[in-house]
Image 1 (cartoon, rainbow, N blue to C red):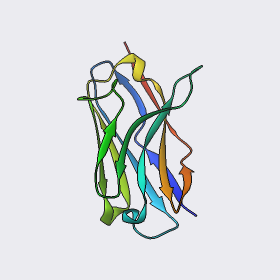
Image 2 (cartoon, helix red, strand yellow; image 1 turned 60 degrees about the vertical axis):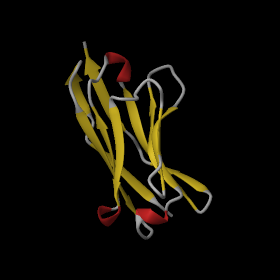
Image 3 (tube, helix red, strand yellow; image 1 turned 45 degrees about the vertical axis):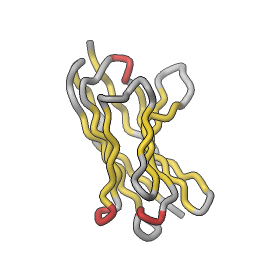
Length: 117
């Protein structure tokens, strides 16, 4: 089993920045994960992929966050980060950490990001 714990959410003004962190536990290094990433769910909307990073470091971003968000991983700390810059009110959502391990998807409990205009 994999446990994922997110942190770093909060209230920020439009144009500001936040860095989300996701610490994985319950297994070996996150290097063993097939993929990790961040999803988000805004009120009244479906959960959507924001950014993912593969085991070998390939990244993929939603068009809406390209050039503003950066996903990275620190295998030694079993942590995945999401650096969010130039935040917009439409980025307001609960952000969930995700990991795929041995063909099974795991999710964190989420962290709320609120961007005020």
